[in-house]
Length: 214
Image (cartoon, rainbow, N blue to C red; front, side, top):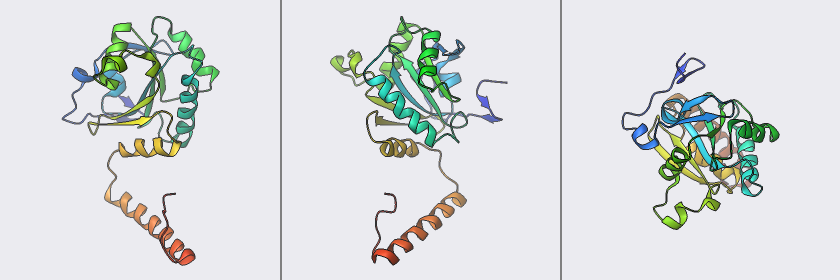
């Protein structure tokens, strides 16, 4: 089975997707020491959240991993099906697949749909600049900023988003939802009916509508 096919689904990119010319098709290795092509196997047609980390980080990396673990649990029905997490090391010279495997297992995040990735330093840096580059030498060369952001991609829509890695879970979930595939008319009708019920209950209780999304 082609790697783009998972659970019977083939992931198709948007016609305007820049493809590997933007994302690169560098060959990386995941925590199971499997070779994967960055665009063709990981990005093509998919929705994913990308962050940078390294295994021996004792500062922000474990905190961001814990946040993503919480987000994963809330989206677990989608994970590995139509949503994927990719945590890429900023220190590929130190982080072998085995080191990333240990990091993931120690934090109970060696989970379906979540890949920890390493590769050649040049390829890793190229991916980081293309996904997180700020066109400012001081920022782009400062690895202390490696875990400050999450890049949210939906190649099936050819859309990008960004979230602060230390934002609230609600904020991150909202920003992931902004990149979700468009919902069908039937799905929107069901959601609208459910929300209308909440509105009517709040009007009855308070005499006015409150923020039904709070």
